[in-house]
Image 1 (cartoon, rainbow, N blue to C red):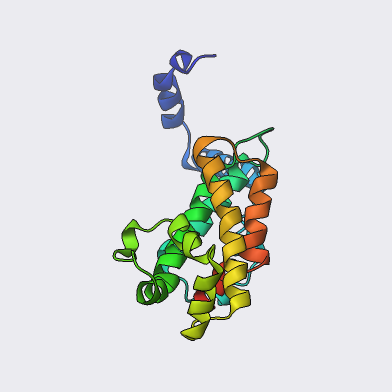
Image 2: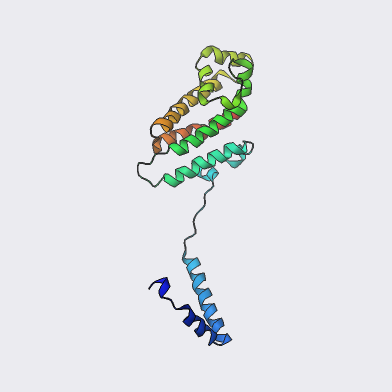
Length: 200
C-alpha cells in the first residue's frame, strides 16, 4: 500500500462519526502502541571519551577546551570506524596529533622560545619543530641546565614525538591501521605524554 492510496477524507469522516468515548479509546490505543515501540527500542549506550580512552576526567580538567575537543573527535572517529574492516584511522590520528601539537604550543613553546632560536610564532610550529631540538643531546642538557625539566623527561618526550611524527606522516601520506592508532593512544594516554607535556 502506498501513502497516496490512503483516503484521508474517509478517515476524517469516520473520525467525525465517532463518539468522544470512541475517539479517546482510539487515542489511548495509539498512545499505547507508541509507548510499546519506545520500550522495545534498545537504548543506545553513550560512552564519553574519558571512559572510551580509560582516562580520568579530573586529570584533564585544566586542559584547553580545544585540546579536549580534538581528543573527543579522535575518539569519536575511532568508534565510528571500528566496525569497518581494514579501516583507515588517519582522521582519528590527525585529531590526536592536533591535540598534541596544541599542548606543545601551550606548554613547551614558551620554554623553547627562551632557549632556542627560531621559535618566534607558536602558531607556525609543527610537531617536528619540537622534536628537532630534542634530537640533539646537547639541547636536552641545555634545557636541564636552565632548570627546565629533567633529561629523562625530555628524552621520553623526544621518543614519543618521534613515534607521533611517524604516525602523522602515515596519516597524511599513507594509511593508519587500527594497530597504529592503538600505539598512538598508548603513547598519549597510557604513557600519559599529554599530561607530561603539561607538567614538564
